[in-house]
Image (cartoon, rainbow, N blue to C red; front, side):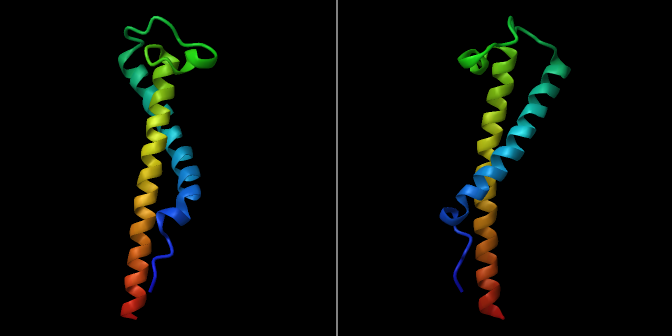
Length: 95
């Protein structure tokens, strides 16, 4: 049988699920890290526009955690769905 869950076919679903889950986990990670360590050397909390993505501010650090976790979870979803499709394809051949 054929793997119907290739990365090309599942990219949009993986992107939505991965970014939603990953960014949620990234925000929790950033907030927990800040609660555990304190503000540290962050002089500012961040700001509007591009200042919100400056990694030396609190908001920028959390935003970058969210972005990195989001794309990491998207990659995990693509790999997991592809491997699941491969298992389904080999199970269909053995039946």
